[in-house]
Image (cartoon, rainbow, N blue to C red):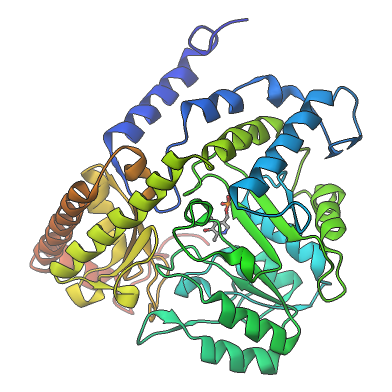
Length: 438
Ligand code: PLP
């Protein structure tokens, strides 16, 4: 029984380098965080050795008495962390991540070709909410279900609820999905509930990005209005990589959510290869994270995530940046760089060179997803590292410097032979396929 360093120095070294990268850079990707040593200990434990298909007390393998104890504890803590009454809400803690959790909900409550409406990907939604383009059904969700994404009002950067309502009345979706990957504001759950009720749809919230903020009650509570709530566990919640599905225990529109969702997780999506046997090491880590999520310290942390993000947003506005929706109520800001004359892809690259890690992001009105006009900046990870508002103001200044350097570089290219080369290769007569067999 060797340690990693003894058994495999090559992998050990890669992990050491990655650790150094994580600790020496400014980690601003809104969907990332640093989980605790205690969570990592559970994730790196013997729990990884055990198969346990089924639910506590109803397994397809023997030897699960402690795994049953663990999963039941994890479920209890999940409900307690989100202040849910065990008689009214249930939870499945087995989804391997956020995307399978979402597909498990769809499989549970929809038939093939039933209609769904989620926020459009270029406007901040997630791929798994039914993304498609006029030419192509991109996500599996849009292949198996009929998807009609709703969008933001481009003049305000806020969800266009009036348009959502009008479209829902015509499209008659069976499921409306709230939640996003790049939306700096809260969703208007009462309004979405009213729209769902008007058209006879179920309402789901994918709170992946903000579940830590929800647990600490620093943003609106989706559980008051939604029938189903899904989440990843590794973003603002700061747990191991995984997913959870919360469901109402009473039937909704004739659907028994509890049995439908549990059956979709297993055997449903196991049989279609999205879900494997439960990852008990993840469930162990998640239980640890959910205990912490009930502590006063966690609430203080989540409040700081929000105040740090506001400090970052205000400084960026002071520096002349345009933010989608004008600011932020949560853990992320979305900067529209187009008025600066630069795109998010180039700025991401330059900042990467300075060990500032964030991501390029589409902003409303963008034409290209590969060279989008914005960047997304999140506060959870650096808040975990102990940063306060003062440091987030400094981060805004660093980013500004990165943008200025990118603009300089762009100017240098424009006045150089490189620009002649660019003009040549992008001219209609030039083909990169010349002399290449295809
Ligand atoms: N839902 C939302 C809103 C997300 O932002 C993400 C990931 O970024 C997911 C689901 C999917 O999570 P995973 O990548 O863990 O499947």
